[in-house]
Length: 297
Image 1 (cartoon, helix red, strand yellow):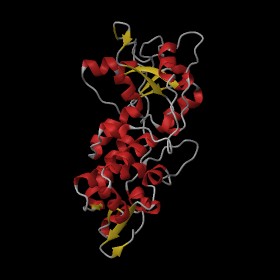
Image 2 (cartoon, one colour):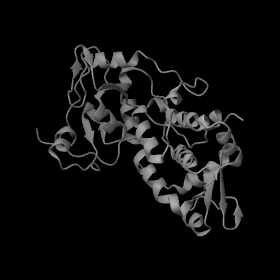
Image 3 (tube, one colour):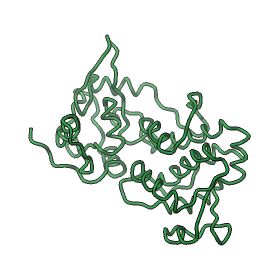
Image 4 (cartoon, helix red, strand yellow):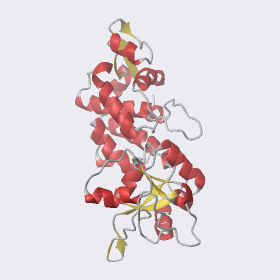
């Protein structure tokens, strides 16, 4: 049984690029808990809050429940659920899962495979991360689910991954003249730019192309905030700042809140701006809440 392929082909609800990372998040959480206790079960009532926080931080902007993946991941052959009444999930209702003491864990076949080949944990985790989340969030997400990955586990898995275009970074940074499109940061050491990255607007994991019109040159801070849904791009290529973002320090006000309503910096004449279809995807699938009103200049 090819567990990497199974991780890559989780059955997820999909329509026009809509994000539904419920199952991958539960799977990653289960792999992290397996590293800590290979024989332990995850009682729904005990892990519900953890899963709810993961969905709130790394899931889609709309409200959702961890009961959905807890029940439906069973259909992918890597997860099982038992209750006080015996094997089998009672369904995807929160009340039912709580009342019957539902507990889930990786299937015996998968646990046996992970024991035989400990590196499989990391390789499966990489597949789940690469196919569902942008690289800027991988480290934070692993920490959130308690996964410890070895550096050697970052290898490419051509069987389940598209190949990225290595030219995109240079093309995007050139288009934006090596400055952050949100804040204008343009730091270098000698002639080498530092802290500048090419961000996908529509995530590569959701068929975002490696094209300039799907890219932004962003500093590391604003790239992370963009991928977390704190920042977005509205009509007329003006910056959106989520109402849900809270920051009272002068730095938070200057580097984030004051950006609301400002136009993007770049791209230079002749370079393609961010395409409307990619802006719309990010606004609906990543940006959290409503945008703040534009700040006074």
